Amino acid sequence: MRKLHHISQKNTKYLVLGLAMTSVLLIVLSLGFGYYRMNIADVFHVITGASGDPNGWIVLGIRFPRIIAAYIIGAALSVSGATYQGVLKNPLVSPDILGVASGAGMGAALAIMLGLNNLMIQIFAFGAGLVAVLATYIFAKHVKFDRRVSLILSGVLVGSLAFSITTMMKYLADTTDQLPEITYWLMGSLSRVSTNSLLVSLPFMAVGFALLFVMRWRINVLTLDDIESKSLGVNTKRDMRIVIVGATLACSAAVGLGGLIGWVGLMIPHITRAITGPQYTRLLPVSAMIGGIFLLLMDDIVRSLFVMEIPIGLAVAFIGAPFFYMLIRRRRKC
Image (cartoon, rainbow, N blue to C red; front, side, top):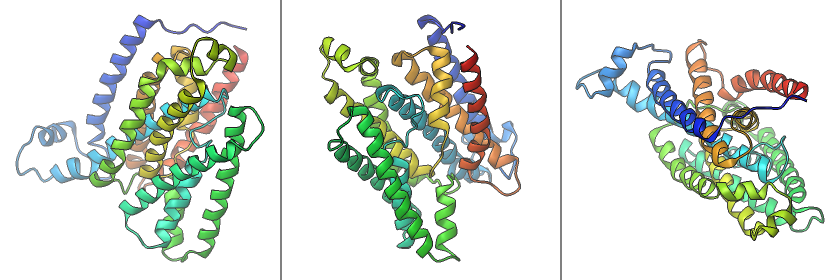
């Protein structure tokens, strides 16, 4: 078995700086991508505040909120995925393992069935995602297994129940209006992101990020066995609750904003872990930026290469599934 060589702490600082610069550059360049192409000179003309520019609304009113949403959704899914994989000690865990995605999908479908606007759809999705995780945590207390196994099993239960309810609502939905909207939302899309919807999700993501980054040292301890963790004087139950709350806030806010976008929270943490190693002090910030860059690149592709925009969740799946297959084959040979 070949030993993996991870970058050092000093080189991690350079990596974070490079990723931060790449992120800023990509965000600026992405402002020119879309059905209506703009060159970099026109983009900078708008950014510098030139008055009377007809492209100002396209760049700042439509594209900028969507670009920021793509980046922070990718960061939120990656960070929450890395966190769940660590504290639940399962490399196949994704951010929706505790029922967040299925619960959010159920909430969005309910809002669409009620004829609510896009902002309320987002709020319903976010709220239902949190309720699903709360139900998972309550059910886990009554499952007589290891605490981490109980959470996973309860998450599967709650997710399956929420998916069944969503399927029932799709069956009852109006086929000319409601059903296509529900289906499109469940495939993941950023086409309806606005400044208002971004501002609704941003505070919850910020709180989730803050909790996880404050607890990043403790996450390293939570990846150990319970006996080892307790021997270090760590209150594992309390710390796990805080970490799960942080990851759930970030994940549910991301799902509420952009719909169901899979693979990011499963694939990106593995890629990052191969670069930085398992230490969460390095893994979390690098994973956030790589996830943000990845999803923003995917959004640029779906906005630019196709005449009709396809849902970003489908585009990520087309690339994520074979890429992850190659990744696990490579890890198997190591």
